[in-house]
Length: 291
Image (cartoon, rainbow, N blue to C red; front, side, top):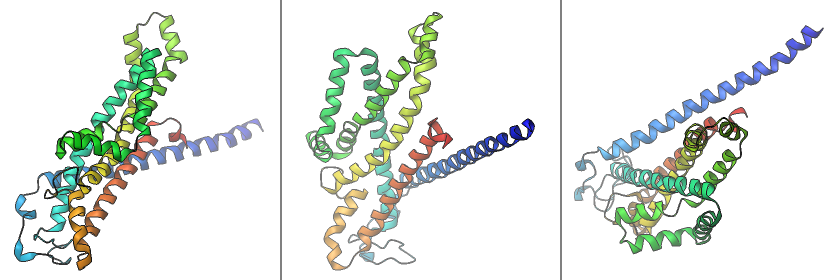
């Protein structure tokens, strides 16, 4: 009887283990596919020959066709190639801005948790200040103050996306510092550097990576928003925000494809980036990986 009960109790555990393993495999496969898609879009845009998206006045404002998948604009640009090129610029800016913002959050969050006291209060005050000011207003002010362009947009996005991740990293470092394994390491004579390398870094790194990846789609959207409003990249540049801004004046003439397809590409890439971040979070979070 005891053996029967034990065997029955063992089946759900194996089943749960198999389900968890299947979820992890699906998450890894999906994260890999999404990463490849984003990388392919980035490489395709950056390596695209300029003649593919150059102006051709004999092909102005043509609707979508087999020759021009997304149609052409008022200057004769092939909108498919022009949009892919603009998307690659947005991806580059998003990568740099999210990486800088993530690094700022890592430094400030760690310093805030480790130093405490006045330093902790000052950092949290600045984080609250940035979160209290409307996000778009802060983006516009910073970008306008430094003259816009690629540098202005990247700086504006990088300096406005760190507060929430800073709080997450600060909370994680505080939790680690009060952990029993840290106390045990100190009890056996381990120094602060050893504890930081063996306990703090391995536990904070997943939070940092996932947080930075989740900042990436926000950076893309805000770069496009700044350019659309005229405070980002030049409106004659192959950027999604510039394309959407220029297309507004031609919607009334029936050129619907000028805004539809670039907008759909932007939405698709942002959704891919969000999904990639969520899947990586499932792989690195010990709580969600067992769900």
